[in-house]
Length: 75
Image (cartoon, rainbow, N blue to C red):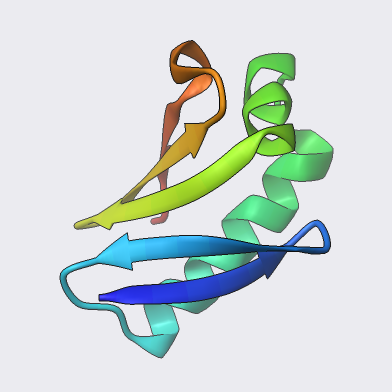
Protein backbone atom coordinates (compact mmCIF):
# COMPACT_ATOMS: atom_id res chain seq x y z
CA UNK A 1 0.00 0.00 0.00
CA UNK A 2 1.27 3.48 -0.86
CA UNK A 3 0.15 6.68 0.88
CA UNK A 4 1.57 10.19 0.69
CA UNK A 5 2.32 12.24 3.81
CA UNK A 6 3.05 15.96 3.77
CA UNK A 7 6.30 16.64 5.63
CA UNK A 8 8.27 19.90 5.49
CA UNK A 9 6.13 21.18 2.59
CA UNK A 10 6.73 18.17 0.34
CA UNK A 11 4.86 14.96 -0.37
CA UNK A 12 6.72 11.90 0.92
CA UNK A 13 5.52 8.40 -0.09
CA UNK A 14 4.87 5.95 2.74
CA UNK A 15 4.96 2.25 1.89
CA UNK A 16 3.51 -0.50 4.10
CA UNK A 17 1.60 -3.77 3.95
CA UNK A 18 -1.23 -2.29 5.99
CA UNK A 19 -1.66 1.25 7.26
CA UNK A 20 -4.30 2.66 9.54
CA UNK A 21 -5.04 6.13 10.88
CA UNK A 22 -3.32 5.41 14.21
CA UNK A 23 -0.06 4.41 12.53
CA UNK A 24 -0.08 7.47 10.28
CA UNK A 25 -0.82 9.73 13.25
CA UNK A 26 2.10 8.18 15.20
CA UNK A 27 4.38 8.58 12.19
CA UNK A 28 3.54 12.26 11.72
CA UNK A 29 3.96 12.95 15.44
CA UNK A 30 7.34 11.18 15.55
CA UNK A 31 8.62 13.03 12.48
CA UNK A 32 7.47 16.43 13.76
CA UNK A 33 9.08 15.79 17.14
CA UNK A 34 12.38 14.60 15.66
CA UNK A 35 12.71 17.69 13.46
CA UNK A 36 13.11 19.83 16.58
CA UNK A 37 14.60 17.42 19.13
CA UNK A 38 16.49 14.93 16.95
CA UNK A 39 20.25 14.63 16.81
CA UNK A 40 22.27 15.88 13.84
CA UNK A 41 22.28 12.51 12.08
CA UNK A 42 18.51 12.23 12.23
CA UNK A 43 17.97 15.83 11.15
CA UNK A 44 20.32 15.27 8.19
CA UNK A 45 18.25 12.25 7.17
CA UNK A 46 14.99 14.20 7.48
CA UNK A 47 16.29 17.03 5.28
CA UNK A 48 16.93 14.65 2.38
CA UNK A 49 13.99 12.28 3.03
CA UNK A 50 12.67 10.62 -0.15
CA UNK A 51 10.44 7.81 1.19
CA UNK A 52 9.31 5.99 4.31
CA UNK A 53 8.72 2.27 4.74
CA UNK A 54 6.64 1.11 7.72
CA UNK A 55 7.44 -2.39 8.98
CA UNK A 56 5.58 -3.37 12.14
CA UNK A 57 6.23 -0.65 14.73
CA UNK A 58 9.23 0.86 12.94
CA UNK A 59 9.56 3.37 10.15
CA UNK A 60 12.56 3.07 7.86
CA UNK A 61 13.46 6.57 6.66
CA UNK A 62 15.13 6.50 3.22
CA UNK A 63 17.19 9.53 2.24
CA UNK A 64 19.02 10.58 -0.92
CA UNK A 65 22.31 9.34 0.50
CA UNK A 66 21.92 5.65 1.29
CA UNK A 67 24.25 5.97 4.30
CA UNK A 68 21.86 8.46 5.94
CA UNK A 69 18.86 6.07 6.00
CA UNK A 70 17.63 5.33 9.52
CA UNK A 71 15.05 3.32 11.45
CA UNK A 72 12.64 5.19 13.73
CA UNK A 73 10.49 3.52 16.37
CA UNK A 74 6.85 4.61 16.30
CA UNK A 75 5.90 3.36 19.76
